Image (cartoon, rainbow, N blue to C red; front, side, top):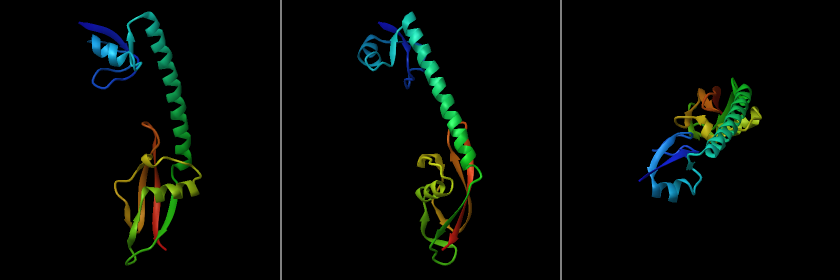
Length: 150
């Protein structure tokens, strides 16, 4: 026997918030409803879902505006990082995302998360590098990093 539920949150392999799905009674009773992932299809559940959706939309707008503000501060930032070299161009060690973050926080006075830096690999030689900073799903910017011998 299947039970019809209204999803309150996105559930992997089942549906997105707001979808009406049919699931087995045991799955509904033992997993979805106790974890507050779904509710029986009623007017009250629909009103609750609409309230949650409005709150999520407001939060998403706030996060987007904060990301745009940070992008304005970080965008076009030019950082110089000094490092020891082996032969004048190859670094003794490498420049990691942590090193770049420290330089951003020092020069740009903006704090960003390590996961927001898009570096395919560590910087292992002197030169000029463009590093993408993805602050939000819709907002990304680029910074220039100059690695010099020091």
